[in-house]
Length: 228
Image (cartoon, rainbow, N blue to C red; front, top):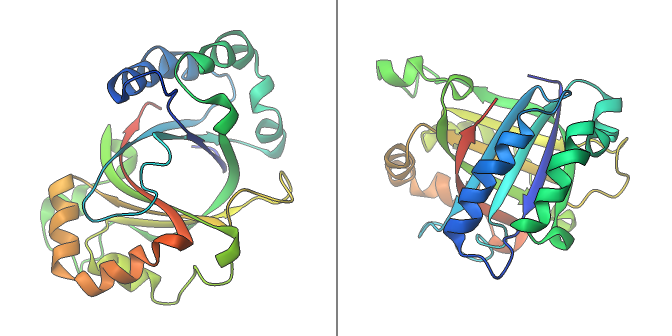
């Protein structure tokens, strides 16, 4: 995958059902997206309602995650020929284009793969998000007002305590946008929804710390679907 990552937070067009939105996003939109010449990685994260989250979890219906190689590709990704020919004309067919939020970021990997101290299961030991077509993920887009508060030295231990097999913090790439829409992004992965449920049930105090105050972030539970 590329070095740089772009998040695009997408709202559903209000006259479409949730099913219509998600199906159109998968096809034909993802089919067009996979043909971008500069694209090195492509994941669609489809939001679903969780009783473990509250507040603004359904503010966005989905999040696109794109990986690109270099600064120039990030700056000009919406000028790529396939984007102009197919992706931009398709966007108004299923999304609220005016509400689209885009964030370019660099990843800081907190935990990659299961720590033997926390995970003994052979299946967990073999799991990798890069080789799976789907996974369950918590996405937290941190509001700018809480820029100084969202990073803690406890983060790695908290993620492992609730069974997350991967934990990443993403920091805005301010060379691209001096005033990014979010202060950062937290991502935690589980292989299945059952694994997520079991993980947070094992350590509810750690889950509450990770979840944080709902006013501090736009948090959502998603099914992450890897297309590239």
